[in-house]
Each structure stands twice: as structure tokens, then as C-alpha cells.
Image (cartoon, rainbow, N blue to C red):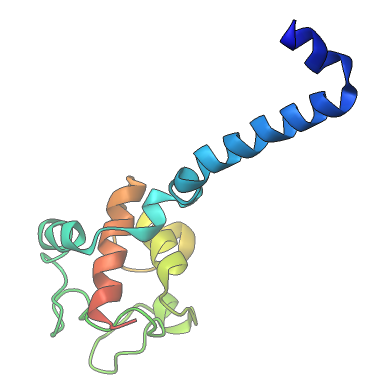
Length: 142
């Protein structure tokens, strides 16, 4: 009987539908940022440090040149810009600034991003790249 009276008046149907919609929005709102924020983009600098130690330190150091250039402060630095390191011609002339996007492309496929460079590494897992990038960013105080 009550349901029949609700659906007989169109205004009541509209109010009921809007009420249900609003409660639905309120119920989902606390989870909206977790749904929309990509996990890989933020990265975990602690895990990035572990990955850096395992994957990068054979060629790189944070504060001195090895086979590769030092990487402390790389975030925000121009490619090929450390005067004490001998870069490939490709890196010297690339005119890239290392940020999250360029480092992600670089670590995904160095030759695709800057052809004819001297680095032979790729990290296929987006979350690992994001973690290493977060670690390097943290070290660069950016």
C-alpha cells in the first residue's frame, strides 16, 4: 500500500531516486581518491632504495661517477650535464630534464627514449620504476 502511493506521485519517485543517488555518492566518496590515484605514479622510496641497491649500484653511485654518472640530484638535472662524466654523444645532445616522466621512459627503454646511448638496462615493471624514481626524487629534495 505504501509503495503504491509512492509510485503514484511522480514527485515522490524523483525524491526517492535523488535520495538513493545522494546516499550512493556519500558511500563511495571516501574511496574516490584511492580509485583515481594511480599507484605506480607515487612510488615507494623505501622500496626504491632497495631496488636501487640491487639493480643500479653495479654501474651507479649516488655521489661519485662509476661506469655511469652519479645519481644524487638527478631529478631536475639536464641529461648529459655532469662535467666530470663522459657521456655518449646522444645523452650530451638529448636536452632532456630528468623528471618522473622522463625517468620512467628512460628506465622503460633507454634506446627508445634516447637512441644510441650507452646504457643497457630496462625495468619492465612499472611499480619498480616508480619506486626507484620516488627514491631518486627524494634524494634530490624535489
